[in-house]
Image (cartoon, rainbow, N blue to C red; front, side):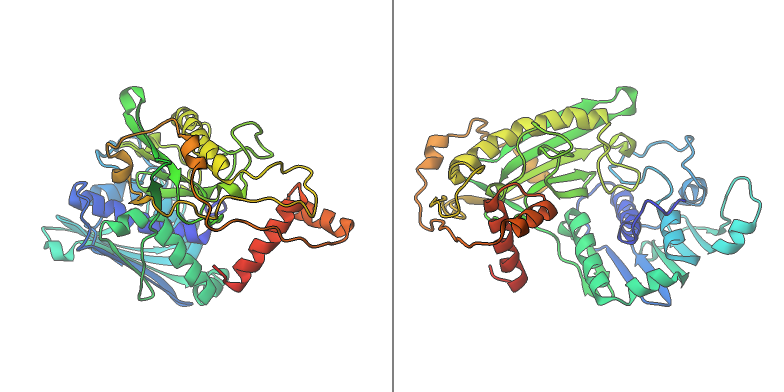
Length: 435
């Protein structure tokens, strides 16, 4: 089924992405979205998303949005949008409810669509087209925008729409996924609450961020610009550590610590290393940008990577090389001996939890990742080891039955007693809100 492989949050993000694509077309690629808004409201009766992001061009509506599948006759836009598969809006409507009304006004046209999904599904229409009520004439720019209202909400979706935890989770999810657009001035509200962008920083000091830019040419189809930035963060938060992957500024993978990116795991050994909390300061960023979004290495739901993409296979080799340098530097800072057969009462010291207090902070954006800076590809580990220790680690020791420890190891997929000790301690800090 068309909705089976997409989660509700991702379906809603798809509609937000469509509005952002409209902002791109309206601005001609201009990065200033300060006068544009997207507002979402949802309850057990209806879901509404409205924007002033330029509206939907009539030709695009007829040939792409209200047909199932994207016809090859539509030329690729010369903008870095995220629309590619031609099913996002329809799939979202089918995910949420059985009746939708779409009203959109663009520069030279306005249309209304009333789509009763149940009636439409029963109609033997070989083209699977959805009819439009159209008015063609010039419209004032203040009227350009789109409003989508979905009613007859499915029971399972109603439960989410009246759930405060779901709304909070959705708010955080959208803020992460489209953070770059919010930073450009776009106003996004959910049930009246303004979203704030996710701001990620790396540090520049003895360990400098590594930056690379590559162009991958895909014959006559176009070019993908690949920007890689790897560095360390002043926040040693394991939840935020890992790789952040963007396609045309849409975050599709967040804080990844698996072999999808550069880490070793049960699916792929000997890539670099398995993630360990010693690497909690690691931050990696890969930006893929193209005026032909079909060349980008994302899956059809834009929620993960297409690892078979030639573009990504090329980029991953560059990511691994850059990651190794930063991981080696962090190992030098936080190394404290063997992890394998550590005794319960063995004393060991770490470097301080965050030994980078004198470093310059750089906010990570595609622009800052591409800025020309002095790149130090070979990290000077001797300088790292000279960092003064002001907050040393200490050992906490406690005893539990071997059988119980074995069960926890299996459940948590950990190999050593020390890992279990650190995991349970970090869990306590997290649950109690201790920073």
